[in-house]
Length: 240
Image 1 (spheres, helix red, strand yellow):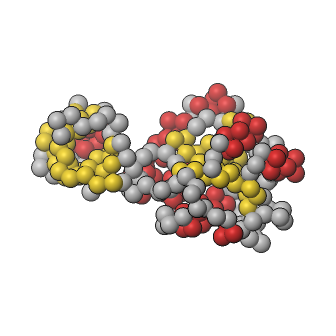
Image 2: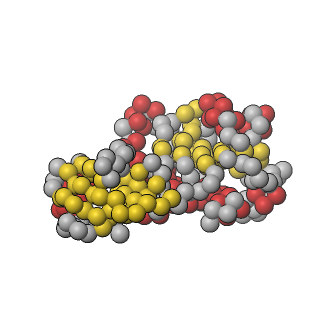
């Protein structure tokens, strides 16, 4: 069943779908009045019957409503900025696995160092990747992709999470299976760039209260580490 995210609430038991989604329903999908679609709004999933279809507006009347398949924890991925194609892949897979927000971070050893203002121009494309992954995986929200932040700001945001974590390949970190996720509502996960974190950055993260985690003896690529860590966290919290 085709799936659409709608920001505006239903009026009179029906959703109004406009813009590119309306054109997609009528032109690309060639749907007809009486067919069903799924509309996600406000974290709820609604099965709807199409009542009106035009390029300007589609009216979809609610038939039934269920809770969306969202994780019971909010996970923010703080990803040290990799090359753009890698970032797109990280966004897609992280959204599929259940990340709630993805924050690109500029660290000492980042190879890609785009201007933060110019990077904002890429956000619409990155948000489309997030939206497509959310639709494909049955998410109840479209996870936010933010602009680039610096390392110090990242540590402040990380500290606001119930459980702040950072992956570091050096010895001393805990396995995720050794960490208790009981009564945890929000997790912050910090992943390094292609060149890893500097020792200074790792120490700063520890001083900020972040818990060092270890993903095993094999060194994972920067685009593999977040996928592995998120998958483990979602499994340990009963969200896979």
